Length: 176
Image (cartoon, rainbow, N blue to C red; front, side, top):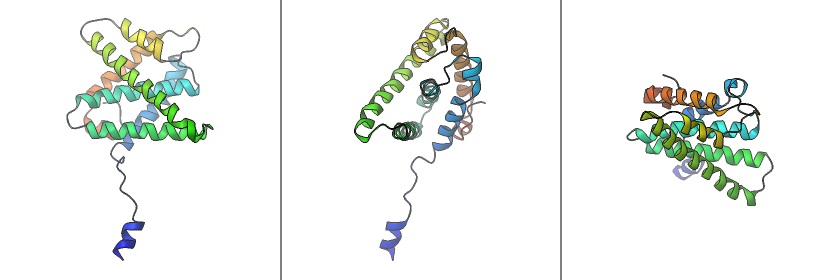
């Protein structure tokens, strides 16, 4: 009987701790303000940009938080699982999913590095010009929309994420 119990018992969900935070990131990335007010293109690519920019801000916060390495890993796994499913749903074949996932992970890694540098420079008394350049390179904006508004909104979101208590952040609430 114990063998059958082990075979048919659901596997533990290793990502359960990070799932509310992932859902909070997705909810924030879907907020209409990014698209209607700040000029991000309301397209698959524009939405991907917002997911990765917000995820990068959260991962940078978790990076500064002792003992959150596992949560950061699980959050990244949820990103990978979600993007994998999105690619497959959009018709990308099994043989090409890995190649696309490699590119998406490189994009996320690049955005984390760029935001780390830009936010660090402007925290040390610099202006937001570097952050604006990062946004100009990493977000698909509507024609005529400049990166300044989006940069200011991301800076404000970063400050909110930083000020938030870890417990609330892990529960998916990105604001303090």
